[in-house]
Length: 261
View (cartoon, rainbow, N blue to C red):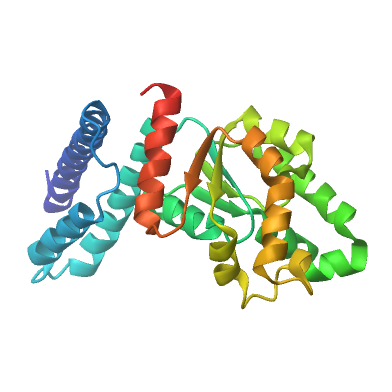
């Protein structure tokens, strides 16, 4: 065996060790998740991930391959998040609620923590149409926009482990709710009219509130939609005066209870 063949053999041995180590690591990730579920411990622990990253930094700070090793571990960390997501959710998480209830913030956080695909329905529709939601309303009317919502929901049922953030009026159609429940769990995020107003008062992307951006109008519209929201929801989470971490922990806990975990 010449030197080149020897090096190739050594590489093959290293690859085998990496494969075995990754399989063992992934198995441990699943064991950690099972332990947390069994003892009702918090699923999302940002401090622990920060600790892992710090340990990695200390380990590779003087390595000539620092950048390459860090890149590999970024992929490993993402894989761990996906494993956690598959362990917890065999379905899509569909977020509904009035505008300003926290859907975008919560969906961004969940998709990051679990490396789940994120679909912001309003943004997806705007991107596909090449125009903003207010412009779609102005040019084609609300009925046209609602048809686009229904078509997108139908399309999304082919996937799983996806976080879907719905527009505020998506539950107004019963067929939309039926589509959501085909392959998802529907999470209703709520907040007081006062909280909603504070969150949306500076936004120009709320055509329904055009000329009526005040607490009384918001409260009236919320009450009109409340029955449909609650009928569609599998679980309900209030978002007033809570951090996104607190909201997501409560959401996960309630979903686990729903599934009997």
